[in-house]
Length: 362
Image (cartoon, rainbow, N blue to C red; front, side):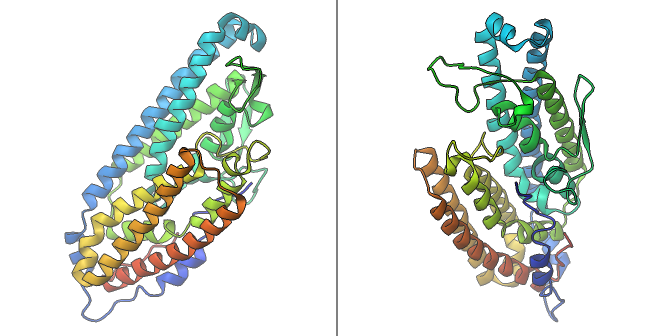
């Protein structure tokens, strides 16, 4: 499995681009950028979507608590639990997966461009969404743990979305499975037709909700600077190749034979579209500052970033409509978009130099 490496994977790129951020005689000052950039709207956007993500994790937790209570009543005998409460269990778990995908995860991805791209907030992205497990990457794994209700402790488990709650809810990690069952009665047990191990579900849901709550508090107190906005754009726009590699290896491209246990609840294309949308919103709010220094450059960035967003959204919509892309296409898209995104990041770094705004270290 791969660690996206927002912090590590693009450190050289950011370092190289940041060379351009020197003070240019006669340049528009950083104070002008503060006046022209609408940083209040950038923060409002982040507050809104992190808040919606927190509401989603709270719903997942509510379902996990109900499921745990039912499992405890059955003595954690999952066959007995299914036999006694099958319809309720099927509905409860479907609601939990929907809250995870459409509420919690979708809104987190709309937030991620800023959370992962702003150095003072990036820790939360590693913890919640992007970090590897200790088993996959002992060096870069975050030294945190998740305690389960039965007393077990998961050390360096990896991101709470993709190494714990997603595998629990969709049954892609056998350690988190209580019982696989044909919930819709069609004669086939498919992805997601699983009764989670109740301790893993409740412990993971508690951890995800608590971590998202801490992120929510951090965002509320965050005071954005022009450097934060420019840094997030430069770090996060050129992340296409890594995302598309993960998409290629996921069930959405490779199919049921994929051995990738992550990125099954939501296609990586939807994640990338969400991230780019948030970055596009961020740029729109600082574009007036760039335009004050170089109107043509400001417009060029707007157009090229908008085209990048539209391209990914079109792929997402095609996939949602039933198009099945191949591994070769995933490689092609990832390579093309990475090249375009790197060019846009260079243009934004040029704009930061004109405004005498340094790109922060990742």
